[in-house]
Length: 52
Image 1: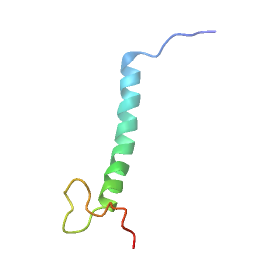
Image 2: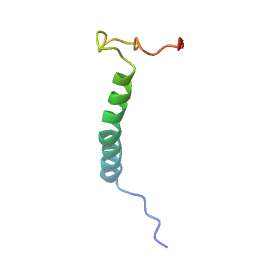
Image 3: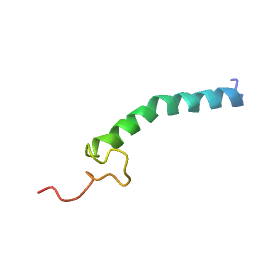
């Protein structure tokens, strides 16, 4: 059996693809908890434990 490790550039391309695909999802999830008037604030204004 051939057990050679993957080259560095292949690992780098793999992680680049993972970040490229997941980064927009993380941005959309972050915007989902923000209100319209506080779109670029941190921590998100809509993220609270007050549900009532």
